[in-house]
Image 1 (cartoon, helix red, strand yellow):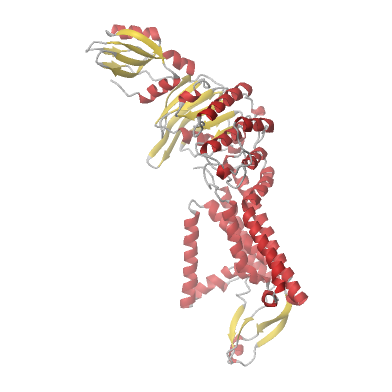
Image 2: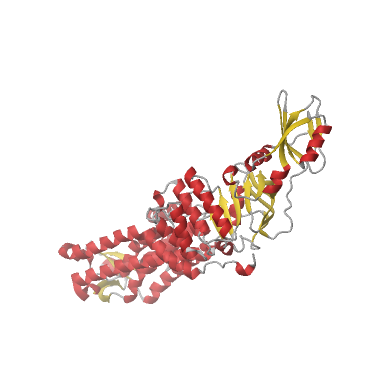
Length: 290
Length: 313
């Protein structure tokens, strides 16, 4: 057979479109459950004033970080469900270059994830608007100009007006993206991903616990000492800019020592986004041979 | 009784052209040497059956040819392409039925699964796929995870054939099929080989099932090829001889001959010997044996005899 009569591999673009469909089908059941839950919330929540008061106002969308973090972990498990990461599985047997095919699948899962996060954010904004109108995005925040004075009750603590920053709405998308890419990198890049994930989680918990118990500087630094610390991923660094101020009267507040800005958020989230993207990029390059 | 002379079985397949070429390939899995300096060549257009016991390395080889198995040394080419370097192009020209009976996406219907394969496989012939589905009585509306082993195997065979690939790699293709569907499959394969220019490498334990389809055979044991040849050569040269031999019988065959197996009864003896019939009969006669009957072996019997041969001296 001449070389000219041999067929070429399937282009990655074709694989990407097809993966979008197949990954959508693999996540269909879970996405329908989420969609039904969000729709139910949108219909039922306005019927209860108590629930509506709980839902807003929302001054810092970065508060959605922990939820987005959790949401981002789930899709990799659905996208790669029943798929062997190495060796003979349908994905690797098809005539598409392995790295490109893996990336197409990762991208497909990410697009569906962004759809789910977008749906969640849209429902939340809708509920806040229903419950509080545009006031749901305006309010006062505590600001500590002098923490020591504030704790001594001699001033240094004030309330300042604050409007929900538009960039803040990007935060849940970025957090979900980071956890999605990180979890995918673990799944695709390591021979025993679940061992590594569980081990890594135990180490993180140990660091957190020892930091809590011993108030060790290194532990706190790792968790929230820098823009790129763990807090940078989860809250976009705004926890790092807050202190817990207990007044002599016994009342306590979270007060900003420095107001979060687009630039501070970006410096927190960008390294995580780039890091997890690079990890995922490398993981997809790994040979699938056994 | 002494039997001597060990002429190796033929391995040289001539100058080609070859659709599949394997040279000096070795692969070790911890304590197991799965492939050991393996050399094999499948001529273009051949239907080559690779026989061997469990653990001989058949699946390891097929996995490598799909670009999914790593090798420690040696070279592999499918239509001149190295599967390790150009895996996607190789897979675009290969239809593969794996040893396992699992379809990738249990939540898909069979119809959607085949559609997935169709969209990603160049040259997919939808009409042919639909005809294969009818021939194999495949229910397209069933979910992949509700299929039996045999039903899964049918879908795998359809997915392998539907693009009419240049090369077919079939790993135990009849595994899990009932006798009716097995018959359908053999008919479909025969028709496929007649209609489409295909080279096939079939790995199986059940040679008798595919005997009428194949024209080349390779015998693999412990990761090494004992021999490979056209089936006609095997049928012509590997024969079973019955006769009687004296107690002090000592068989010494000439070049180009090889005793594959000897069974000695109280009165009679049976020799399975590779070589030209008249030369073997003459050799047995010179050694004092009287040959009473000679018969060719079926491919299955030949494979069994070759695999059970021992170094006799």
